[in-house]
Image (cartoon, rainbow, N blue to C red; front, side, top):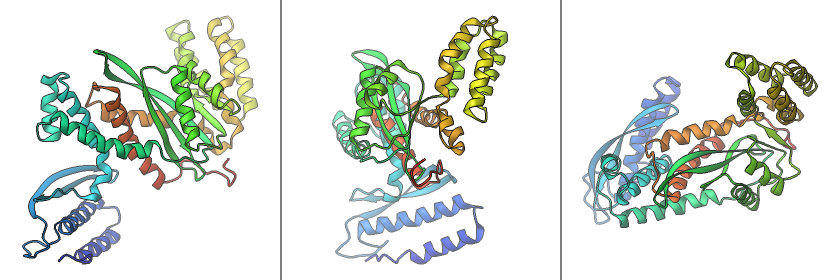
Length: 390
């Protein structure tokens, strides 16, 4: 019978080797460690060591399957143990597999529902390794949805900073290809660490969608919000006025600079206007920023009157961050933290290209952001907060 200490000497030796080598060759050592842990897991599942004859044996080893896993330490070339007679998959790999399972499921749903079968079938075969039925897809979807629902409904707490943004994914709806808005909320908690607070999928960014999304966050315990950072979207602004009217709002300065380009009278002035916007929001105080804004309004009053008027009306909305600690300014004046999350989501959803329904889209996006969230909460701080949270 296998004991818990069967592989302890091997694992201890690998850890000692890691201590001697430092970060050099870390990926190789981690691969060795994972491979040994997976062997131990298989023996525990089989209730027998290799070639052992005993009454407690529940199945048999069936070789290994090569698998390459991307990690922050590089590629891990793993050998995943297989079994015959019982279902088995190493738990030490399970955490990083959610988004992969969701992606496979999205492809499988497309295949089963006959969406671009000629193009999808080879991908489904490559990713899933076997032909799927609608019953199998439904069963796997139910298991994964139950797991992801725990993440979507987990209790929240005090979040001094909340970032809100959305991107779009292609979905099939009522026989048509539509753009689906995927709303995302990221918070910085009392420890100064980032959390993915939630996501929500809808066919628009209308006020009612944003309002329900924010209300769900509040209902899950989100509190202590000291500043909200977002782009200037009419539906979102209306939702914030309805749900969190007293919370200071910071308009993303990156998007402000992009919006400014719509009011530039000539291509030649684009670079100049972009630099003007940077100069305003890189000032060392709010007073200095306001003075630079006034100067820019006067400077372009005749050369670019539409820009001058727009800047006077909208420029102050990007200055709320000056009321926060200076060490926070760079990270709380834009929604770049959400944009980077959007990029990671798109990297995974690009394979699917077109989701067969809204649920499939929400499932894959949730799986991806849940994994990123887990890395954030165990990783380093995003901001250093005072005891009171600011």
